[in-house]
Amino acid sequence: MIELKNISKGFENVQVINDVSSVMKPGQCNLIIGSSGSGKTVLMKCMVGLFLPDAGEVLYDGHDFIKMNDEEKKEIRTQIGMLFQGSALFDSLTVEQNVMFPLEMFTKWNYKKKLERVNEVLERVELKGTNKKFPSEVSGGMKKRVGIARAVVLNPKYLFCDEPNSGLDPLTSMIIDKLIMEITKEFKITTIVNTHDMNSVMEMGDSILYMHQGEKEWEGNNKEIIFSKNDKLNDFIFASEFLKDAKDMRMLEETGKIPNERDMSELTHKDADPLIDPD
Image 1 (tube, one colour):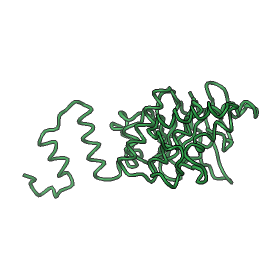
Image 2 (cartoon, helix red, strand yellow):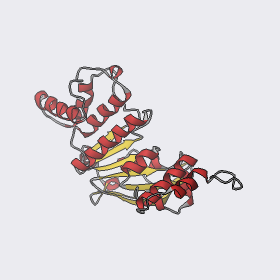
Image 3 (tube, helix red, strand yellow):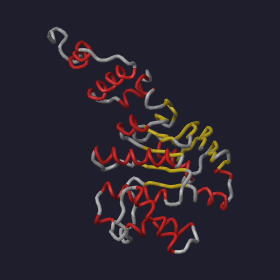
Image 4 (cartoon, one colour):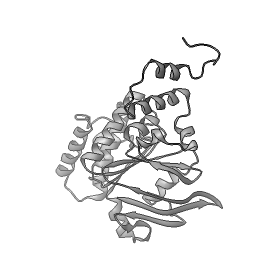
C-alpha cells in the first residue's frame, strides 16, 4: 500500500500540487487522471522519488520514503516496477537483454537463473520465443508487453504505469489493460496508472484519483464515476456527445433498468430540434 499525505510541490513559485492525500491499495489498479498540467505526472514522480515534495509524506507500507536514507530507498526501488510511456526499451539490446536488465542491476543471480526468470515473464505476457528479437523487429503492442515483462521481472510490490496505452490502437490498448489488471490481481501488486485513456478509466479503475489544477478534485471507482455530479469531472471524462450517451446508457445498465424504445429515442434525439417529433 502507498499512502500520500498532504503532498505539495511547486517550481519557481508556481504551485503544481497542493495538499493532495490518497491511498493506493494492493491488488488494485489505482488510476491518476486529469488534463495536461493538472499535476498528475508530478504527483507520480513524487511517489517514486524523482521529485522531492515541498511538504507531505509518501508512505510505502507505513514507512516515509522521503525520510529514508539511501540504502532504505534503494531497497524500496528494488520493489518498484516501472512501465514507461514509450516503453523505453534499449534499441541495441534484444528482448531478452531488455527484460534481464533489472536482474543485472539488482540481483547477484547466475545467468541460468536470470534466464529462467526472463523466460517466465515473457511467457506470462505471451511473448514466448521472442528472446533474440530487437525492439525494431516487434510491434508497438509487443514493445508494451516487453516493457511490462521488464517491469515485473523482479516481482515488484509496486507497479507504476505512465500512459501505458499511448500510441496504441483501441484493441491493443484493451489487451494491455487486461494484462495489467491480471498481473495486478494475480500478484497483489499496488499498481498506479497515469492515463488519459477513458476506456482504461472505465474498465480498470478500481480506484480513481482525478486531479484538477494541482488539487484532488474527486476520488472514487469506475462504478461511482458514472453517477458523479462533479461538473469538472464530468466535463473531463464525458467531453463528447458520444461519451455522454455512453454514460447515460451505463447508468441505465447499472441501475438495472433495461432501456426501452423511449429511453433509446431520448438518448438518440436529445440534441435534435425540439419542435420536430422524432416519431
